[in-house]
Image (cartoon, rainbow, N blue to C red; front, side, top):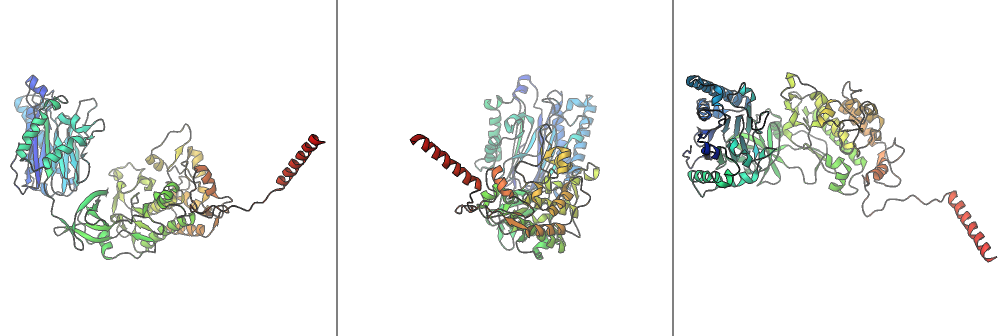
Length: 639
């Protein structure tokens, strides 16, 4: 069903349908069908693909009716081009699928055949410049590729209980099995195909797109060497070739869609044109990209248009006053498409900064910073800097929000809090998603609920979430980078997932928890006893299931850290070994022996100090005995 496209079309579509060799041998019709049409001419489109069941007598009629009916119904809805969220798409596409199923039931009734004889799958994809939405019942796949990213499937391939068994639109309660997605973002290539080429297009058993298959196809569609009709004919010849038919004898339908030109340019008032590069990270509400033409900046694109009350916009106009050494990655300018704000420009973290694990873990710290950059006193200073910075933000009515591995970055003298879109206003906190957190930063309470209230994995951010996250980060800084709920089982005990360790509050650093659970801290961890008693009690109160009544405050944590910082002693042998004064022996000398390397090495050109040589009385006695024996031997030989 090739369609004419003007030179002003944003999308180029190349569609191919091929009758399978097994159907040619048996005289069966092609049971695949597809239909696509413009939602807005040249700007957005809707595609439907269907694969009739091989065992169903009239599945060719079913697939043809399904694609025609669902596209027609969707195009009749004026809201389709203006959707902004998944719930709207879910309602619209589910209604269209139900109408399509009703049409199949009416056809079966008119022709006096069972509905199962019209069994077919159904894939739908709506494509606009700002978002892509999908719907799937049955097998086949929808593949997406963002600029400079590998292709990925919108949904995993659907399989039934047995091999080659799938769910059909005509199956009982089929709409309950439908997969629905709504993704905002810029996509360069989209492919929609039936099961006939799954073995060619997907890597089994992972069912992920086979890049060597898609790369030349997408490149060919992008090329200007031929018209869309010539490309369709060439691809038809390829899929009917002996090389392909040795791999599959089923009907083949493939719709390839390529973005021909970019959407209206992204602009910054201060920096001008914004050219997006590699995707750096993604959260539930935003995506962070490199900026090709501004290498010191990154572009934060939001799913929803921000207003002046959002934390990001307030940060742009009113930056909080922060203590020295504690910084926030604040926006430097807005990003606009046409006249609409779609995101913010952010300064990248300095190259000498590293994630928390890169400074807290001894082996990684030495690799990143070298010898004698840090001693334990400096680690405590960094933990203090973090707590004092957070407390200052609290005084100015801010919360730092959900923590993850990408949010805290550390240098030798300062730290940087990134992902400013996760900052919270204390007076008006936002609903956040579990996916905004790294698992071990979540409070166990957020994992223990299976009620409908928490079924969507979102919740209102609270002060307890904030306190627990900061305590977790400080614990990691002081305890060689390990999370409180990371533990290993004793021999004979089962391994638990990270989520289950957190859910059960297995804080193996607490002796009482170790005895009751038979779990112990990781081998390269530190004992909790290395910390002063006051700090031990705060961590046990925070993380232990036996002592957990209410969380201690960050002010208490700050006071305990200050007390530890003021009561340190230096090892007599290694001047870079600084440790709390309540310990009778240097813990770093012990770790030096256990780990096989020095966690706080001295400069490579400086040898460790040696204590003065003081011979003991036993050495003098030994020398005297040796002298007497030698004298006796001499007399016995010569006298």
